[in-house]
Image: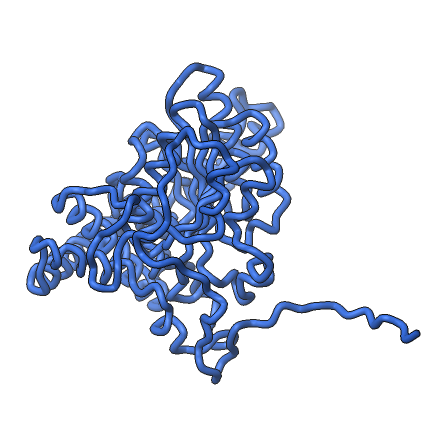
Length: 413
């Protein structure tokens, strides 16, 4: 009898540079075809949602099916404005980084609906635990672009006082937790916050976002275990944008099953949604939020989208994927799809879109001019170095006070 050959399987990339894009692995569902269960439905009846894909907008831009949230055109126009502002802001900040005026940047191009629709479906007092590609959360909640720019500049108005990488924002009064550069840390933090809210009898909930690559981190599994056991009012979002830094979603386990399918294994509903469909994202987030507020526990949502830009300004995606892959993405562009839907409703036009983009571009330029007055890497004013000693201890220990005094003396203070 021949001996069995042992082999190690290495998931291949769908397509390499120079090859035609290949999305044959992507399984979708027709728009409007996936049932919408009641929020009290038992897990066994919800399980199919982890393998199907919730979609509302069809190819013609019409909203169909049971997940249609029936938003007013005015609300859709607000969502479109937030998404366009997020993209134009990203584009401007990338150019600024390439000019050497900030050190680093991460764009969210192609993923705007995940953040903007998600934020709009939640209440302002719900606590958000974002990743570093969720700019739309801040914009949808009304954070000033000047504040975001100042953080990227590490200047005198930097909310992080020069202690964080660019784009690792926070906003206490806006109920958005500090972004961490370490992957998946925000998942257990969100679960813990949600558990505390439930203990206090509040009906607030927490929502967190990570990329699909971060599901390989232990924090992902810790979060799901605690969320399931204690039925925490939390929404855990996996943004499957098809690529980690330079490895496809297959390396994190996407070749074997959907990322939403990991939820039922913990006793948590898992829902897979078209992340480039603004209405579908809104509807699924709204469903999960209502479920959490009614005491029915957590939901794991997989947002299927595409990272249209580089991972960061330190990345060159042409080294690991076809250059034309983004244009071949089967689920299209979230902004263009919402534009088309508003046109179908008679509530938008190409002329209005052009005017909006020009208005927002002018606003971004003015915000940058103001942000630069608070300091740039080459021009003052600069952060006071003595702030190094603040926000560390409630009562400063003598050893730290001694170091502070030594620095003050060196600076001639």
